[in-house]
Image (cartoon, rainbow, N blue to C red; front, side, top):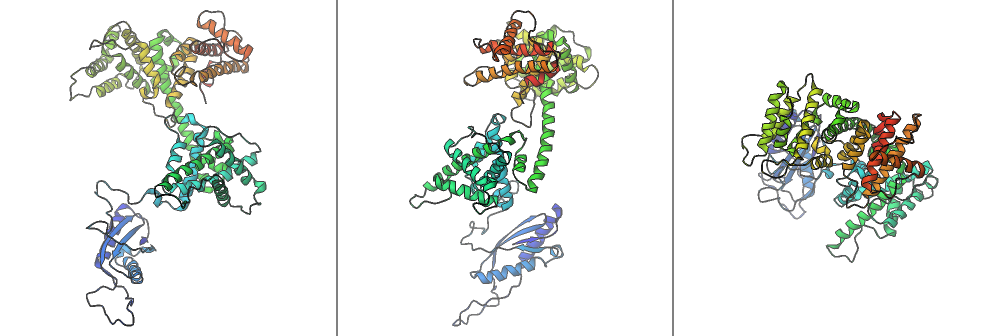
Length: 640
């Protein structure tokens, strides 16, 4: 039974549990229901209980009530009902602590055997330090919450179909469809997909345009196409009265049931000729097929909503549920805040990485005005720069750092921190490190000392950039590490920095594509520094070539877009650029790219990707510099 009362603090819950336990242990009086026939004159002895002995009990207390489970040794259901009803009254009158509580639920069922030799009921927890839930979470959700959860999960999957690039480490649609076979989500999701299709079809009808079936996603394309057509016919508002149903849930149910029957996808039916092991596998397979068809059809029907930033907003546009609207509003606010936070994190990480890359590859460009701005910004928040500098030094090694420091004049106030850092770095490379020391932690503490808040932060960052560049270039001069193996090269170090920039800058974003966002922002900042920096950086970024045949076409498309967008920006600014001046090498290649795109709308087709993409980056950056619109480089080089 369940008793309910006023919500209170955690201490009151303990008091409630103790009071209920005392009430159960004390026993209670219950009327006797005669269960004897006319021929029996048996009577209960004085020591017999009319309701039977209490064999076991459990009390689950929570804020505002308790669930009480009692096992009675009673073989008559009617007598047990009277006894338990009497217990409900007994519990709420036993002590002052229980007077404010009233019975709110009662259920009686038969137990045929005990849980184990000592208990009729399963223990609440095997160990107090390791409590385990007695019911799956889904069993604690009411039907409305399950329905809303199903709609939300499907909206998440639909957005994953729209934006596959947002999830490089796993497709939520795959996960949701795979998880649908777990009870009770098969029923929940198959019911929700019908509602979603009806509302999505109505949305499409209102907007008066029909999209082609989306190809992305798993499942059978023909089945998805058929379900799409059925949804359009069923969900069209002009035909809403023809089937006699106006409720979205019922119309969605009819739509899904008809579709399943037509294509033999009745996953929730049991065939007469199936063996004991066959139904589950067949049912799971049919359910997944149904859901994939529904997801692709729904994603097609409401494709205009792909620009929305979250699943609740999608559901809000399709229906008129007040709860969904509240969630959608909060989701939009949260996403806007997250996007602002991500933008700041991406800028900080990309600035730190670009400054380090410039220090290695083009130290002279650190004197440019744009690089000076980046150093000033890094001085305001040194977290990302701290991480990138440290990661670079670990790869360069102690010998390279030692050589670089010998070439510099170190300010007296920086000497203690620098010396401690170098010593800790050397400790990490020892074959027999001190087990009691934490060299990596010492490195971070020393670097924090060097970059402590105070005047001259920009000057300190410039000093560290000089050390970083010299150390990495020293590693390429034939030096060897302490164990005699060749030291890291500048190209290998920049490769590892660029392949996982989020890890090396300790950047965690709300979205999944952290590394791609940082690299794109780096390219925009490099273009502001110099066309040479933009061309050099893009040549080292991953993704130009590889085993995936889609890489090169995608890279060429992006490169074309950079130049086209830069030309458009210059045109809008009233300073159209047709030529970037005479030059040789990359400047000459860049001019040919501009001429080819201006004349034919495409890049020179005969050039290899490693030549044409850097040339396009140089061209786009040069156009922005020539038209004095370099401040818009982020728009040109950063994908939305």
